Length: 122
Image 1 (spheres, one colour):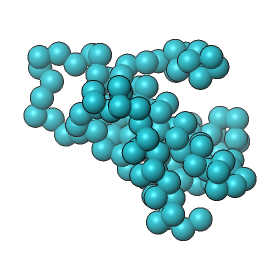
Image 2: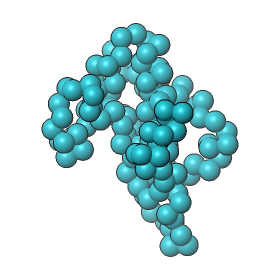
Image 3: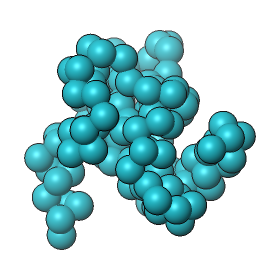
Image 4: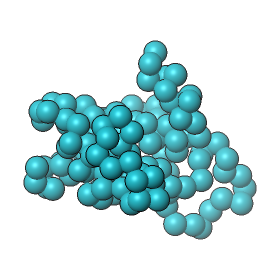
């Protein structure tokens, strides 16, 4: 898929973040990279079961104190190739991008992988 089209889907997903969450999101950048680096993916390669689709880098919102300020933005990275590899249509792709963004925003708010899995299964 053309990168421009993928970026458009990411922008659409970001625009649809629920207002109750969006109003609390500050100092965060969302970027797209083709694939995760080895140190993040753990060398998991193309396995769709364990593929890293996104990653949050930063200080979770609930762990910020009065010391937090005047620092570079937190970053959510969306990995294009692994998402494309597991999706079979544009609609699948849009939905997966939305899920990945919401998952990483969950990390921004301080939720663990386990807490996010519990929410996603609900």
